[in-house]
Length: 255
Ligand code: NDP
Image 1 (tube, rainbow, N blue to C red):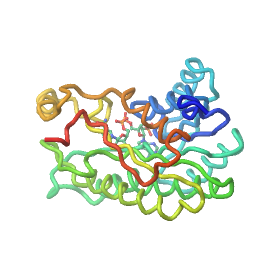
Image 2: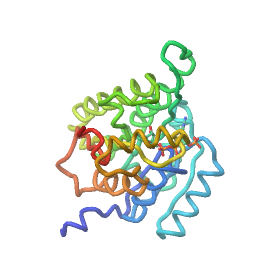
Image 3: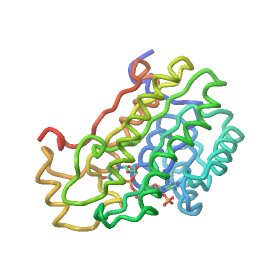
Image 4: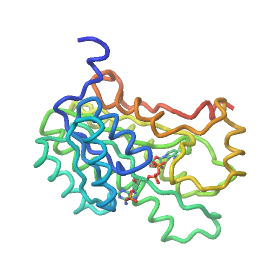
């Protein structure tokens, strides 16, 4: 098989949480371009359906949307059931859904802390658990978690201890899961982006200029800069890669 053929995902079913916009949409589009049937899982069905329709039109692959709150176990179970019903399996899971709530640690409410952990970390656990059961029965699969360079460094000048904790936890979770599920043929890897121009970032030019001053490549990433690594990690191109975390941060962490 040629190198490029190893990136193909024809006949495979991929769930992308938060696939309706931003990084998740770019990843879902990339997986569809590689031939996968794609399931967009986010909280607002309308935006998920719009993204699915755009992806189908752009790539010719099959794409559906399933309204899902990743922190709700019953909804996640229904997402996995719907995926199997529509496409016969779950071969790829991309845990991408996430939120960030800025605020001083000494003022942060328990509610904000819990919400961030429930979506960013518990959500990835729940999706992995239910998609993983199908992958185990089918003899394997690939899980890609969108963590963050925030798992490895302190962010500045914004403040969000809960976000940092959720992404650090997701990095550790992935390594352990990679170890536990290697025997089932399931690979688990992380993408750790730096600053990517999406809705999750605050619209504050001074803050953005501070971040840019710390990067080697001077510009924020675009979601499309993240997607190729997701296709690599999802596909057989990375068949010997598991338990790894790859940063796409424009060299931010070098300094
Ligand atoms: P966006 O805010 O554009 O996307 C966040 C996505 O998560 C949306 O699709 C949203 O859809 C979905 N989402 C949020 N909560 C839930 C939930 N409970 N259940 C299901 N889906 C949910 O930001 P990004 O594209 O930037 O973020 C994607 C991931 O990338 C996040 O995990 C983020 O932490 C990570 N990341 C982003 C960086 C950046 O600089 N942009 C840097 C490092 C990591 P909806 O609201 O409709 O549910």
